[in-house]
Image (cartoon, rainbow, N blue to C red):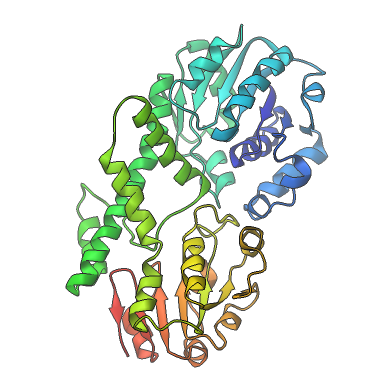
Length: 429
């Protein structure tokens, strides 16, 4: 099939790479806010496993064509599929672009709305483009494993009200649907709401577990016992049941805000969703509060090492990441920060600049701990899971380890002569 992709989201880049890889003839028009020269050097894209290699492969083999403007996009043979993957704040100008790019579509073409827009937006798009059927395909990609999620999907969530459009989408994605049936069809509005509801449920589980971890701290209970007991219940399970120092990310956070907007626009108010968001923002400060309590509020002039800035392992993004809240709180108290991250340092510097209380490190994580009073683990990159414990203990002046992801064994840390404070967990040497 001939496919036109418009957008600069991770979903657009992944679709361009994957669809061209399996033989479709793909033309990719990035959004004007992030053209290809900017995308090709962006940390979040270059750090995504496999993706840049597949994009370059498609470009070199000719199955993928990159264009810079709408005129170049529609100049040749008409397209069978128009794949739209733009951010919510680009919705209005994207709608105008869709109307202009319609001239490049063949009769009976399908518009695949892979963007996270308000519920009902796919129907609105179809009403503005004559002769083209629109379907909603939920963006279920995970940063850090987008290629794997697209090419070996656990499911496709397809919102479709037309049998012919469904057949065309199934053919488009047939190469990624050979192991078993992964396309789940439902009405368009249902698919749009389901996508938002999924992330709302996951966020609720995380925030609830974080709330329980706070209670466990107050009662002197190790929350790991509670987590294991809850997860063993078949009605609950273990997924998204790990307490931590807060979640972030452009898609997860954005979907929660979009769900809140949908609630508000329908005349309803979700007190539950408000609490989920409030708990998460409060949790981003929890490591700072533990540091404050340990030193009885005397923080000025101290040095703290932080391992991890990205909102999750495997990405270079820091959108709504807990590290941003931590940095602001620490600097307000005059704390010097020695920050290590294998991928997200450029994003941090772009966000906060060359701050006088910030030193950044990309090599050996232990270098960031030299001369520090305490270590905060914020992002659970695999490089942080098994440090050289004697060397780490030597470098931390006050022997304090604050584990924001509960990845360490408190008893082992204590045996190495350090104070351990996790999320609902603690141990002293």
